[in-house]
Image 1 (tube, one colour):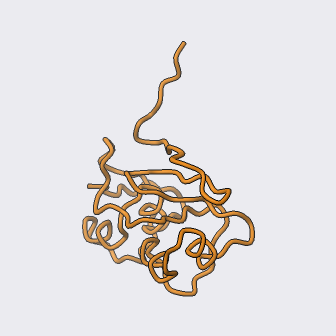
Image 2 (cartoon, rainbow, N blue to C red):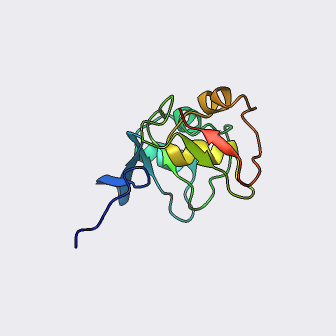
Length: 130
């Protein structure tokens, strides 16, 4: 039997870069940091100004990188291009976490959902993706 791929919930490894597998979601490239990584280190590896990394990831300059968090190395999309129209929030999930999961700019996602960018979501809340 062939494996069925959920086209809305997968990432593709585009190419390796300095030992990182560059993956893609919503047409935007990202990497998953390794232990001890910082935004500055990843910016340097990808020859990007660190300010751009912060901007691409909708995070304040000087923020600490959380383990397992996606770090986008390109500007995210204005909306989700996959088939899903909504995301159902899990307990304790933030609007930024949804933006990172789907590769959508936080400000656009906030405007689309009439929420502040720093919104905490409640479990089961539906978030429009486009």
